[in-house]
Every structure is written in structure tokens, then in C-alpha cells.
Image (cartoon, rainbow, N blue to C red):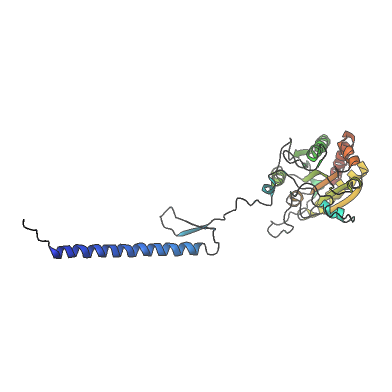
Length: 321
């Protein structure tokens, strides 16, 4: 059988073309890979593990860089989301300062079961402060009342007494007094539900509140709990500075006079969200200590709650005169 002769020149040409094809193709693939890798690294150099490259959908070119802030899902914000477990709310932390001034050795005087409401004490990133206005010229004042805590957030707990319930009872009595005196009254909550701090602040914006009054109770967790009692009030002067201070002093003095409770003073604070971020005159009042048996019993009585509500209502009347 005769063997077929192979056309060697043709074979050599095919081999050469194949080698050239592999070489050229490999060159462009390698170049593309190198360029893409360098571009990706440059895009995240300043923000390692945070940069993402996004394709420009309109023309298919990767000519735009989108830096996306990657939030660690385990981290929570310092505003209302940081307290979503309902373990606490604002209105209690600063008490430790005033208690410590009395020389108590525990170093935790007046602190309750929570840390909610803390925020930065600086105002560097805040909008310009809102100035005072002529409050006596307001024809139909809008009063926002804030019964602290609620829902899964009980606030202070002493025995079977929950702060959220005492706050709400006093607030309802105050609301009725104010409505009967011609005020428009808005509550941050009208039932036993958790309302985040930023939501309370936003509610004051939504209803264009002219003043904001937050009602809380106190707790002392030291050995001398039965000797610690009285009323404390807090404000911040970043927004409506004169109005906030005047409102705090009026409400505090009227409630102390009505109840004959111990006067623990008025303090300016920088760590209570509802008096810092609201722009109208705002006050947070701690009307008593649930950890003190005698004062707790008074705070549970209808008559004493009416005295507190009446004192706050009279102060609001004077504020708008």
C-alpha cells in the first residue's frame, strides 16, 4: 500500500499560525487582567475592604467608581437603633452626676437600668441652632408631651412598678389639663409601645411643637436608696436657649412647690437626645425616685400625680404669657 505524502510547507504554516494565535491571545488576556487588577486596587487604596467598582450601565465602561460604606452588621448606631433591645431609654444617666455630688461612695448614684439617649456632647456637625422667638405671641401653642419609655422598654423597675406606666399616667392627666385650657396637645405615644428617641424628636418636627416636655422617673441603685428622693429637671441651650432654660426652671419650680418634694435642681446636659435634638424649648423632668418606697407610693397615687400634672400645666401657662 502506497503512503500518502504530507505537504510539509502547509503543515508548518498551520503550526506557525496556531502558535501566533496563542501568543497574541495570551498577551491581550494577560494585559486585560493586569489592568483590571491595578484599577481595582487603586479604587480601594484609601478605603481597604470598603471600595466597590461599579460598571457604568449606560455605556458599559468601568469608568465610574462607587465607594460604598460597608457597615458592620454587628455594629449599631448611637441613636435609637442602639437600644432596640428595649433595655433602656434616656432620662436617667445624668442623675449619677448630681448624686455623686452628695458624696455617695458608690459612684453609680441615681443610675437606672439604661444608657439610652446618650449622644455626642459636641455640636460640630449639627445645623445652625434655632434662635428663640416671642413665645407670648403664639396664639394657639402646640405642646408635645413625651411619656418616657414604653412597650418592651420598661424604664426603671422597682418591685412590680414600671416607670413607663407612671410616666404615662402623669402624662394623660397633664394632657387633659392642657386640653381644657385650650392647648393643642400631641403625645409621642398613645399606648404601651416602644418609640425610638429619634422618632420622638421627629414627632416634634412633624407637629411643629412649640414646646416639648418629657416625663420620667428616677432610680437609685445604691445601698442608701431609701434616703435618695426628689425632683430633677434637665434642658439644653443649643436650640432656643433662653426658652429652654426658662421652661425648665418654671416647670421644675412649680412641680416642686405643688408636691413639696425635695428640690434636686435644674441642670443643663449634653447627653439627652430629646432635649438636645428638638429645636423648640425642651425639658426632661424626673418627677421622683421609684427606688424610694415612700416616694414610689406617692408617685402611684392619683392625687400626687395630679399635683405633678397641675404644676407642669401652670408652668406652661406662665411660659406662654
